[in-house]
Length: 288
Image 1 (tube, helix red, strand yellow):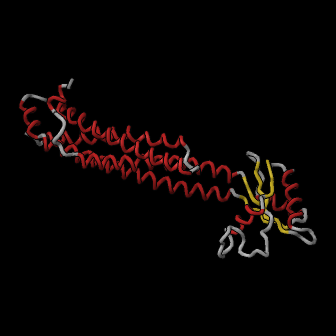
Image 2 (cartoon, rainbow, N blue to C red; image 1 turned 45 degrees about the horizontal axis):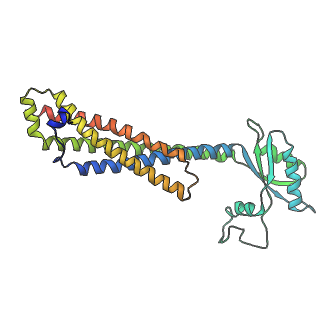
């Protein structure tokens, strides 16, 4: 059974579907951006925490001692050092790939350009939580034992990572703000379009004694239903796209990240209510 407002304001003939389709597309972009932002934030935090508590040690042979023997001795020393939770040698393939990224040349298989010279042994170090141990102290410890090493404390990279994350967050925030403003504009245009099509009905309601608040509420409900449908549709497509990427092989994207897309429909409904109310009242003031 139709409600009183539905009987007075029937569906159809308003020709606002281009606006609603645009709103659905904006909802898709906003929801997808929310998923990407949450996933990116989670990855940055995880990676920064791993960098914050780790270091790598490149070991060079000294005198008659081979690099592998020196690396084994350095690993033993580091493993027994206060503040070091774990120390282990990287596999040659991983060590070569790590060093290869710092060397200019045509790398076709991820190994060092010259097959005659293997990369130096690399030791990965994991610091204990809250440890005061740093690259300088490890470097001094190993060199005092006669080892030639180069220690890279990853904590310097974590600070740069946080800086890059802050810039990215600012860009994402601006993008979301732009989508928010665009969605508001679309809803205002849609409302004006409906009021233009239904201007005879608005005049009749005024003559019948209907208040501006009643008329605004009626149109707000109509445009709000369109906006909710478009917002949920756009968010659903965003979830499907993100889920497809996750299923197709994007381990960086967690299934729980998809829930971020659900925040947009609620925001979209609020946008619709605000934009429709403002546009309706502005038009009604000019309607005799």
